[in-house]
Image 1 (cartoon, rainbow, N blue to C red):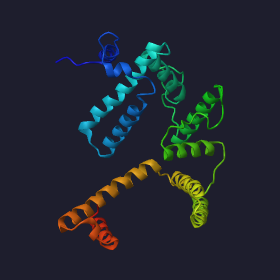
Image 2 (tube, one colour):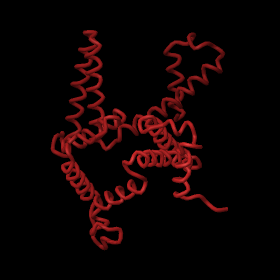
Image 3 (tube, helix red, strand yellow):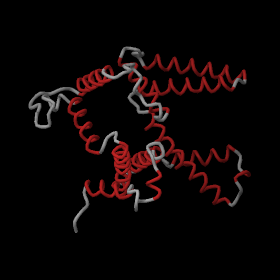
Image 4 (cartoon, one colour):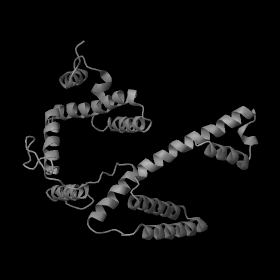
Length: 269
């Protein structure tokens, strides 16, 4: 049986947006309206990978690809760009950012025996990106880090970028000191009952914890997602125990529920 290819997908997208006989839902969409769907699809890809659900990953990657195709169609209709322009821009950017693989800046060029360490490659990557930023209207160090990123991910990127210009501690123990300082300030805000201050200090504490994770080589978003999954597994054990008891939730003390939690830990959940 013949398989569909990328051209078929582009044709399908054009048909969905056909003003005469296209899909009413697709015709209603614009750049802003499909952003939330794009974010959802990206998270579904991440979730599938974390669960190692390989049979469904192909499906989720297809859904994510469709988001790019949708944006390309909208860009074509508005005269801003088309799919070919997206691909061309991407290939040119990746050629430029990988001189260790494409030394002449062409797909045909090869580095041969030239070997570079991961640290050297990362340093070159950041230098090239900095040059690209300086070529734009707003060359600020932090200007191109998207505000719409999840909070922990954006905090990490902000800190990495600031570290690249020397604004950073050189010892994770100093970051631990900062966390303890932020905890003290949060305690004071709680004692005063000042909600605005509590929110502000809580943000500072989370930001400092992201900084510590970075210094320890831990991705904070990955770490908290792993902890979320662990919490779900252990809470499911508590739920099963409560259901098996035949009692209502409110008849259990926190100590009893905590005992179920500890059982889950012992079982390696």
